[in-house]
Image 1 (cartoon, chains in turn cyan, purple):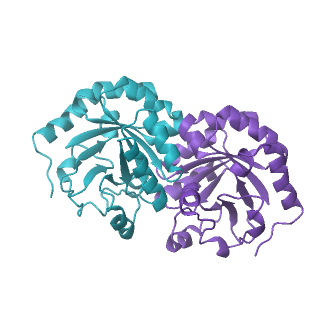
Image 2 (cartoon, chains in turn brown, yellow):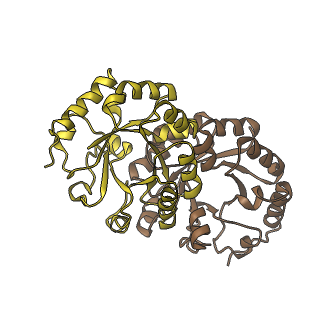
Image 3 (tube, chains in turn cyan, red):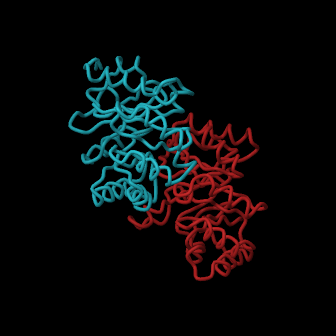
Length: 211
Length: 211
């Protein structure tokens, strides 16, 4: 299981500093949507330059204009870019095709998709699926877990996101996600390096329980 | 009926130059999603500075992190910001509340919403609704018209978007949209000023037909 550090609501300099402190314990670095919408494409090129050996995920949340946005991501050094599962099918397929053309990967964010949309998306087995409880759902509705969480198809690649803490990973019901996306539990910690190391230790020791 | 000029897939300098040429014939200037994802928040502040008396629409396509993104838009000078209708309800309501707090407006983009989602969204009668055929649907599926197009509720405020040309506005079926969003038919014209004036002339002469 890999750790993806999500960098959000920070300056690019702060993001790089925090990722540097957590570097040894994490596998993927996510350039969060807020960094993209605040600072544009330079956010990903600067972070890729600072961490050339890490897998860089650009959480661009594409919902239209797929080829343009995914080309922009990959040219700036992203290895993985995100597309919303609630997008029109043309957009999702164009993201997958653009990723394949560049030898990169599309992550399909299942935020607010219904059962029918999920069934249709699961045919795209080159993608990573992100089972996502959004910030707004966490903060405003106290939602902790998606409706997909107990039925992840283990033949697909999965990332899970949404308010994950050291405490909550012991209560996760997902069967074997490939990637844990962790944001504020590391970025807002007093000691991001120590916080990231604590997550890695729990994972390395196999203490993440799937109920 | 107003004209909203959508600026996309351009540098900020090109966007300002084109908007300057079209200025006399247009009412609203949209800082397109591609400008935001490429250049960040400075795209809106630079365009607002260049056109202080125009209504600036920031097509930020919020789908999470509503308060943060909408605050970012309004602080940079946007008058209207967009939220996706396919977002969780918490996100949509937070966008509407943030807009109200600043005395600004949220535009709800109906892209890929189903009938049930639309019915639920139409309660938010402070918003402008955008009936939207996406770029990818136009270019990859040849889609010209949304399924909503023939049943717009005239008690709500409507914008229509998606490949509108001088030819197509004579074939529009929508009853009285408040705003026509026009992009490449002006921005990619050899003479954006002349193209915008032609749209304004058709509207001023009442030659837009609703079938």
